[in-house]
Image 1 (cartoon, protein in one colour):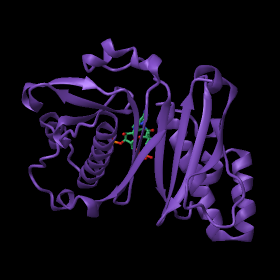
Image 2: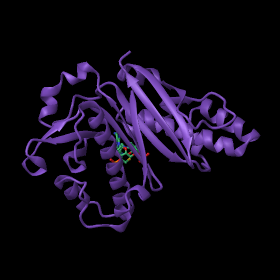
Image 3: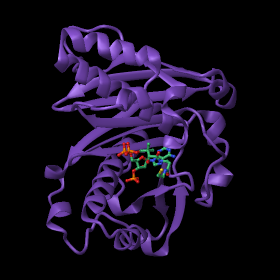
Image 4: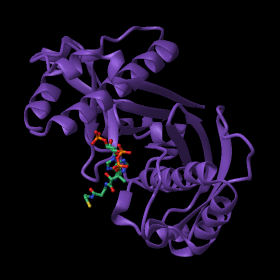
Length: 266
Ligand SMILES: CC(C)(COP(=O)(O)OP(=O)(O)OC[C@H]1O[C@@H](n2cnc3c(N)ncnc32)[C@H](O)[C@@H]1OP(=O)(O)O)[C@@H](O)C(=O)NCCC(=O)NCCS
């Protein structure tokens, strides 16, 4: 089961106020924050952390019945940029041993809103606890692997479609544009978001050409407000490099398209 949460800057006004000390960050997160110079990046990073921490806190409370303080939850990034969740154990954040949590976590932020999802790792991955206990990175691409993405619906001008979409996606977006420009903007945004979600599940991001992934959406009259499946197809080389079965869902919320892509062992 995928757990998810959306938060906006209104949910955490101290981010915009620029408070010097944020009680919900751990000491090492405070250090990382001090190294982020640009205000927009600070806001994005903080809102992503705030949302991920609240999501992890809820999941921990659900699965263990124990409430963890937000500053005892650590959201880190592996060398490839993919986020992970860990928890300080024992004598508090100062005495700390950091235990990596057996979840696949994904973060996205756009225009003052953040969207995070997580899924529990399979028991096989959990048996890698020895690696996790030291807070060291898990083996590459633990399964299931989740990618989440949030994009504001807006026109994508110029060569965007030709540069980033497959021929199939370009013709789906252009065919719809002839009937209904607004619906085509939503579809175009959802296709782009779906690709980013899949690229995050692969932990590769834009290091991979977006045209190596096809996102296929069923026709719709009204953009879905509830999670609705779409199809992810990767090219043969990617399928061989990252074997597994894809599931994916999308919905719209306010002015955003949201997508989740999940890669599981086949
Ligand atoms: C993953 C990526 C596509 C997301 O970009 P985006 O759509 O602009 O931004 P989003 O807000 O949706 O997602 C950003 C989050 O993706 C996550 N992320 C970054 N790299 C990731 C990766 N390799 N795999 C999975 N998730 C990743 C991070 O959690 C990041 O948020 P944070 O830095 O605040 O923790 C992009 O960062 C990327 O391609 N990264 C890898 C390649 C790279 O590092 N390129 C450097 C510039 S070319």
